[in-house]
Length: 245
Ligand SMILES: [Zn+2]
Image (tube, rainbow, N blue to C red):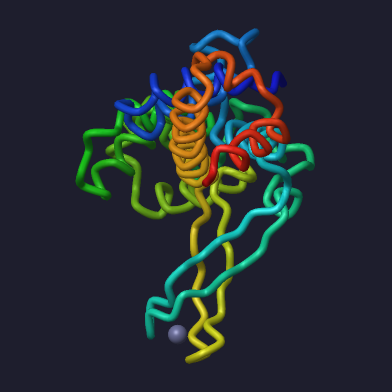
């Protein structure tokens, strides 16, 4: 993994501003893994995509994450410290990428969801239909108990429910759930942690700060953007301190 320079990260941020979330995550990964094609990154199972995004986050901003979430019951803001090491699944996945599932006499060949699926389903507002379409994309072959091919939409509900549970365990790390308890009202609830959205917000805030620094130093010293971005963070902070009245 390459740690993007300040200039590369700013270019990536600017290019990704207008992109939908699933594309943004791929743009961030492409900046860190330029040897992989867009197609290869887009085909990574989401658990693997997120493990790579967590590594990129460690390289850029360190391994400690600060989360602030409102209590759904009393709206109290709760702060929580987490280590990236607590969030990344570092064991071997229980299944190969394409594998077989037997359920109620039905035989299915499935693959875990990837960015390509999120991009394809981005416009789908109905959660039930999105789930159905996702399964249709990820089930590569379905056979009924007689061995005849069957469309995913015709599978019994119990088979579909087992399939959903199975796909989550087949791609560990794709869904990270954190448990919170409110110190004020003691309400406890699970919250899904999305590293792609979290890292994007951090990079967005970093880009705003960086451009403000460029503005201040360019005005004070007549430097170009590239000159300011090439400074080490320590020197940049010292020069910024000298500019303050
Ligand atoms: Zn509360």
